[in-house]
Image (tube, rainbow, N blue to C red; front, side):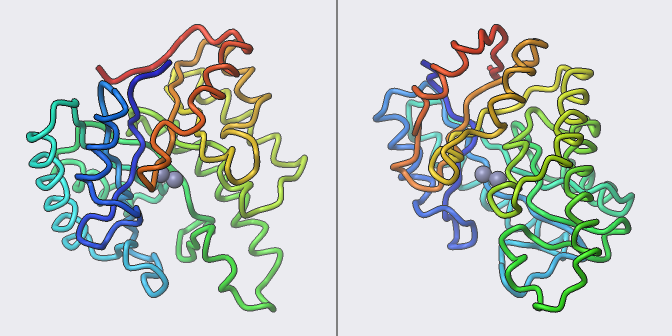
Length: 271
Ligand SMILES: [Zn+2]
Ligand SMILES: [Zn+2]
């Protein structure tokens, strides 16, 4: 059984969206006998992000640097008081524009993360003048332009592919996460194949995210994608995406069994 988790969240400074403190999360993983816990709070910065529904979304890059610097320091301090190995990462949303890339590269330099998880929680139009979090689609007005939104959803899928191609990340989070908020359609299979091809080409590690078992009774990515990725020997790891101490290591056994069934041969670890 995998004895580490690299995808966990906490509520440092009452700013991030976990339910427990870094101290509580790290202590619980240690009690459970994990060798390593990676702490990966959300790093969501974009100049056009709507910050009104979610203070964790940052349009101001200096504020992003400040809060993450303080969070990294806090986690390292807590980690120094524990036996378990503690890594500090971030689950960092990707965007394609040159403006975002410039900012992100500045963030990368300013912040001393041990690793980065590539992630996509937004739909967007081509020039990123409109970006909307999957959880905030419900705030769009009832008469919102459906065709525009459909194009932004395709923009989301293309963004997942480009986040893999970016080379910014140590591993990719929940590749088909959007299906929890956007009904799946056969037309999206084309993007699922593009994701597989992009991962295969770079042998880019990706996670099997077990939080899907709670929401849609299936892991991310879905089973046929996972089967294809195992066949192509793309490295994988299991992530709980724990936002609560109770979720650490949740459904790892189920995911391990599935990986065995799919004859997964190549596992990823940071250490
Ligand atoms: Zn996520
Ligand atoms: Zn997460």
